[in-house]
Length: 293
Image (cartoon, rainbow, N blue to C red; front, side, top):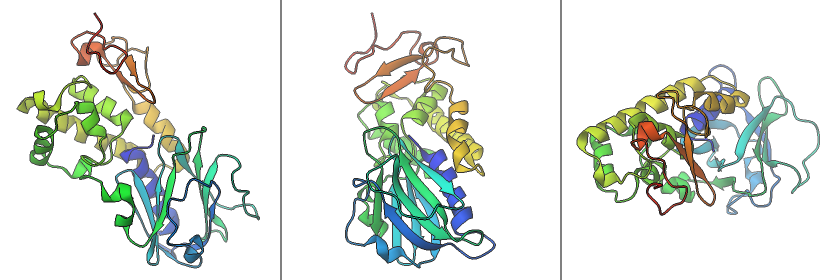
């Protein structure tokens, strides 16, 4: 799933293409809704975007917002979505319901009469979402967002930790509490902070909270720097290369050399290092258990 650093990289890339510092902004030619499930709003017709100049491209948590005139096209890439830019599209419209493309935005730029991007989604579970609205608070996921992870100071972060009664992994992933972090970076942050993902937030002492806060900021800022300036087609590989435990089940932890372990759930999994995070004890691979005996 694209998270804050990758979404920020995509936003930076789109901003350079659609609202460049030098030259005219892009003018929208068309928005093609290819997947029947992708568009979640009906109050604004997609035809309303035709002929409008793009005025801004912004990130809100893990949402991408393209502003044109008085409207916002807001996109959430979910677990298997991605953005693919084309400098020149072939003539003709796409056939709805076919292939991996969920939505296509076509525009006129200084370099091309018909450039733009596709929003794609792999797999059969269709979760990518697009919203065409007049106000960002009309997008439920944006309206519920908590503060951005990198906008929190230590005091505010400590207050969030103190008021949360669940496990620390779930807190980091809850977009209504802290925006921008998903499954992958929560694994990485907890590894850097040497905390079990099953640790209760209320059990952390002041020093552990400070370590967790510092780990979150340092890791996300490093990932943002790595993503900055990269074209969209390089961002996924850059993310994978920088992971220490996430997605590396069975490999050696780069810090201590222990084997990275996994806990699988119904529709996701987490990775961790027993030596670095759980006192050498492997976590049971089921939700309700604490440790394997």
